Length: 143
Ligand code: AMP
Image (cartoon, rainbow, N blue to C red; front, side, top):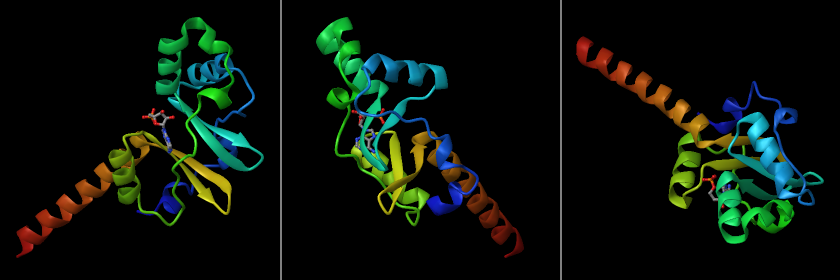
């Protein structure tokens, strides 16, 4: 399945994001309120970084409670690795596995179209594998 198909019933307006200028404590509040693990950091239309719970953890370990007063721009990871709508879910999953992160913005023409977690892609892959197994069982039964 292509990422375009996965995003068909999702509006980009629903993506929770934050600008680089806000304090880390605001980003932590968004992560907690929405029960999510990462936020794309947006400036204009562009994704300029990503701040995940890992970044919060490392920053807290390094700076203690003062970490929460840092700006998201200081703590985020940049540049961001992204994919486009034509990428397959399997390719995106392989990219996440190789780079050891769990989030991927989907960018088209400089604008973010989606924001995927590894859970979204594992779900697609499990459905595909189960359909492949079913097709294989049918093939064996009819052979
Ligand atoms: P995660 O596993 O997604 O929580 O993130 C682990 C680390 O990788 C954190 O430092 C994130 O900021 C960073 N990270 C997550 N996703 C991406 C991405 N698509 N591009 C670049 N860095 C990322």
